[in-house]
View 1 (cartoon, rainbow, N blue to C red):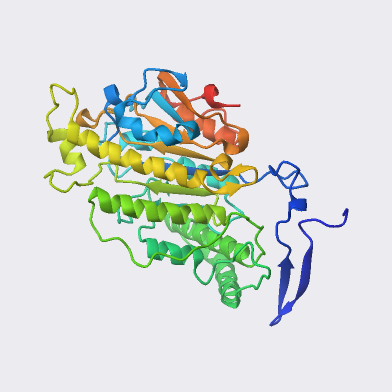
View 2 (view 1 turned 180 degrees about the vertical axis):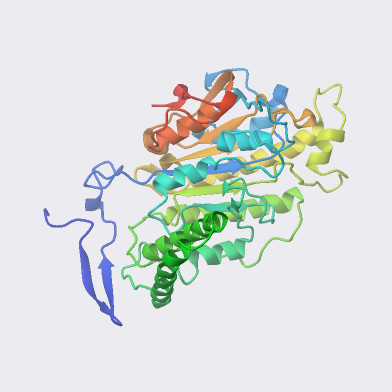
Length: 445
C-alpha cells in the first residue's frame, strides 16, 4: 500500500478541461485513531463567533463556583446540556481609556478588535475573526461566513475596517443557495467536474486584474487606497474561483439536505428570531462540515437587542432601561426573560456542532467558538465584567467545562489566547489599557 494514498486520483479530460476523480475518504487514509490523516496531517481546526446583546444580570448569571463543575444560576440554567462543551468567563473588563462609552458599541468592539472606538462611526482595527481567517481561511471557498438571526444584513459583528463590514446573510433560502447552489462542489462526490461558468469568470477576472496594474500607477493616494481595497475583494474572488476549480478534500460529515421551503416571517418576536437562528445555524453547521469555510460568525441579535415578546409592550432594549427592578427578585424579570431566550439559542448553536461526527469526535471538538456581548448590566451601560463564552476543544488544545474568573483583567486576554491557539505569532493584542499579553492559561491543555 506504499503507493496508495489520499492524493491518488483518476485523471482525464472533460470538454477540453482537465478532470480528476478522487477516491472517497477510506479508513486507510486516516490514522488508527481517526484523529488525523494517515500521513499525520491533522483534521482542520475552525474558528467561530457568536453574539448576543444586552449582557446579563450578575446575581443570577455568574456561578459561585470557579473551575470545573460550576453551578448554573437560573439565568444560565438552560446551558446544562452543553456545560461540558463550553467555558464561561466572568470578571474580565473592557477599558475605554480616553474614549467615550458608546452605548452598546464600545464593549463588543473591544472584545472583537482589542480597541475602544472614538465615535459612533469608528470601527478601529479589524475583528478577531478576520485576523484568524488570514491564517486559516485561505484554502476554503469562503474565507469567512457571517450570518444573523435578526433578518437584517446590517447586524454584523465582523469587519476589516470602517469601510469594509462583512455583511451578514439573513435569509435561510438565500444562504442555502449561496452555499449549496450550482457553484457548490460536493467534497464527497465520486467525480469532480469543473464548472465551465467558473472557468469563464476566472478568465474574465484575470483580465480585469491585469488591466488595473497601469491604472494604479496613475492615480492619487486616496484613489489608490480605494483601488487597493477593491482589488483585495477581487483577489478574494480569484481565490474562491481557484478553490471551485480544485477537487475538494473529502469530508465524511458533509451530507447536504434539502433547503428550507420558505423564510420565516419578518419581525423580531423572539419566536421568529429563534426559528431563524435555528435555520441559519443548521446551514452554518453544514457549511463547516462541507469545508466551505473555516471561519464563521453568527449574531443572535443586535447589540442593542430589539427582540420582542407577544403580550409585552417593550422590546428588550427598551425594557433594559425602563423596566423597574423587582424588589423581591432583585432584578428586571422581563429583561432577564429576553436574555434567557438568547442563551437558549446559544445552547442550540453549540449543540448543533456537537451532534456532527468528525474523526473520533465531533465538529465541535475541532473548533473554537468565541461568544461575546456588548454590556454586562445593560441598564447602566456597564462594560466591566462582560461575560464571554468559548465552546469546543480546538482539536484537543482547549479544556472545556470551566468557569474562569479574570479578576478585572482585560477581556482581550481571551482573544489573544484564541489567536495563539490558531498559530498566530502574537505576543500581545489590544491597545492602551486593553493591551493583553497574558493568555488565559486555565483553558489550555
